[in-house]
Image 1: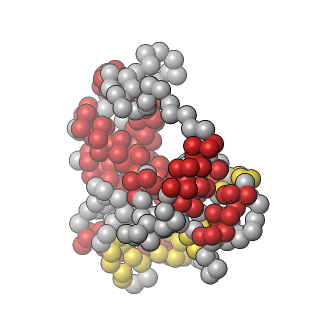
Image 2: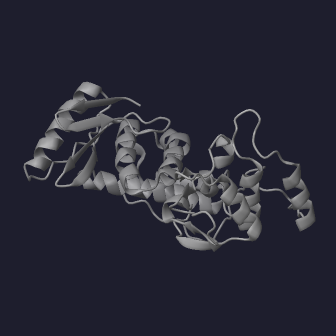
Image 3: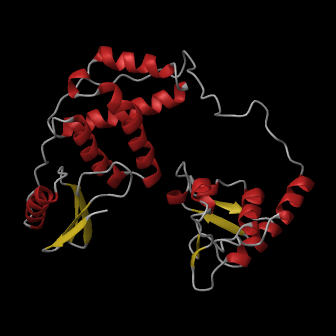
Length: 283
């Protein structure tokens, strides 16, 4: 990630594969301001950042940077703005949609037409499920709306009805038959696990105990922190919307086994309950 600091503002490239557009960040009137510069060159980004900073601190509304005629560069600018209004997880998914499917299919702004939108939907239904295609078109719709904010008017992206061709599920997306464990079998598996990883020192058995006892997603559990989400001895977990995939904030009751596991790993000084060495599992 490249960064540069000058005169009260900082430019940086947001984290994430394929991100190339710099954003400017600074504080004004007690609030953090972060905006896309629309530039991939650091010198051009610095010039644009200085202009945005001057416009904001002087009380004038900063004019939006023009949209690049190159589709990939324009999408990079869109994603830089998108990240400021959405969770990191959703931004990562939308980035994947554009990099893997949307940019390769459309190629340029010239192909943003009603006919091409329809072709995209039909083509993707042969390779993905209907809900997945609807989400991809939603991301494309957000991009078209962002372009309109920058005075680039494109044909609107139609919605894909909920009902119709179900699409094509990936070959290995789901097992044909689920593996059902009895409580006794699950307990034996947990007891066979090491308390900690011999290689990384990460908690193993407490982590999987919490997963089994609560039914929470791995990515959610790996983002738990003390005392925000759990205090030692508490009878419930507080899941904030920031760590839940669906943004659903709630209190989760804990079994004695889950509470004992959390007490075992809860750091006295506060901080993350579990280290995230299992990166593939966290995804």
